[in-house]
Length: 363
Image 1 (cartoon, rainbow, N blue to C red):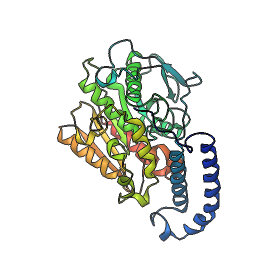
Image 2: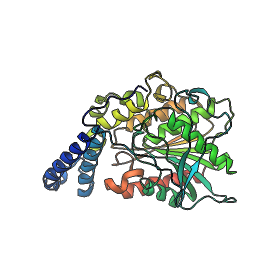
Image 3: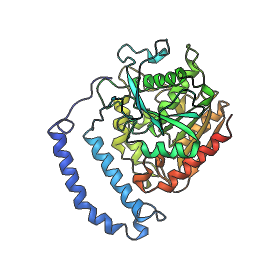
Image 4: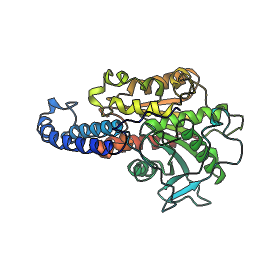
């Protein structure tokens, strides 16, 4: 995309000054919220706990200020512990839009959970792409909570790629999708058959999963389809997210922690200027397709992206796909990734357990 316009706030020392001011402002406000949320009727939802009310307020503030200064998340590729490097595939798996002349496949990496994959392991493998509006978090450390839940409840190993983030230089679309193809090809090259691979994603990671499935379906390289795909709180309509009013005007805005500038930042950073915003990769709700892969969609009953997840399931069913949907009552966005921070640990545990149960029925 065209280089994003830099402002005083998105560069040093402006970024540091804003962060300091935001931290002081939050500390000043916190005593008010601590008292305000004591009566349950004043919480974002009357059935939420006191901790959930406080933590979701803090999460929104954190994401708002992080988006305002456009915080950078450097991708670290040192091979330590369970983190391994992956090199681009030598064959022509990056065809179509992935053959971008400006953005090229490159070395990337990812973390294995609970242990490194060894030749001869016969467990299924969950290839999971983390959320973060395509601009924050990475595939280690930040994802431990989600990874441990998936491993615990699916009897599978999990692999979390650290795909390129659009907040970093020269990393807009199709960088993340190229990294997804590299990761999928890496698993196949380990001798893991496609019927033992489950794609998975939370929030923005689901857009990568859906794009990868579309690429597999349309690619001339005959990449095999994986067994299933798990979509937790999918964020898919990247095109529409450029308009902050789509967030602030949502009926579930009060019960979610997503600020409007967060998704807008992610969408603007991800979509390159030379591509049509109506591309299927940015607006899959308008471009349903058929895949041999079974889909499981989970949404929170109180999250901003509830309608988006439900509509995606419906349009994919209309194309003859096998789709199951589960709504977690009283939950907001992406409890799998941040349930430990938002106070929804039990909800996160439950959706991971249900995902595991779904996978036991898929052969």
